[in-house]
Length: 118
Length: 120
Image 1 (cartoon, each protein chain N blue to C red):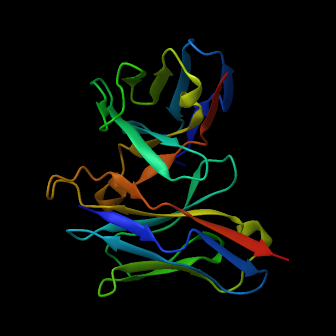
Image 2: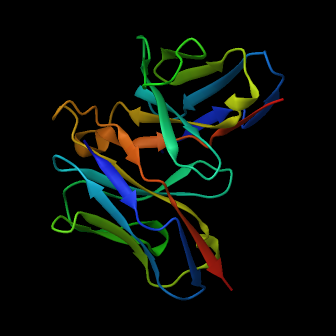
């Protein structure tokens, strides 16, 4: 069965410093991986996705993530944090539908709250 | 493109009443729509999956008689919380898959902005 673990429930950085949000996944087959951002009382916005193409994925707002199969990781990074980046971030995995009974549903991590200090 | 709307964005209802939440795909046809529930400071929990014209598939532990889902068209799904109680208060989020997407993109879900339900 697939699962996803976000290693930090809360990350705090200063504005202008790098951001690293960690995510490890478990999947029986080649997964699709996503990072979503959620601002307070808002819906989810897709930051980026990996679907078996390039392992380094670039997303919106300067975020990127690298798929590392050997480490089963998909960490989210950004070179320089901005105040507007403060939000909740979810790492999400989806298995290939039809394999092992998977329906291709999304499995969410517990989320990492990113705080950005001025 | 790929915009999903929810209505209402916020609703307060009295205990014992029912409330309906609408989820619409505005610029695409959705073969499948999903309903999630999010507790404060928690992750999203999938409640049910609905396919147009057929009965919804509920996740284990979700009461289908309490959370009625109707997916009458390719652009509209509704979630009705029946006989609401304060413990049903939550943030409900829907998502949809684009029928016309191909390959790996087919399984991407587009999320609505969510509905905050408060039961008093």
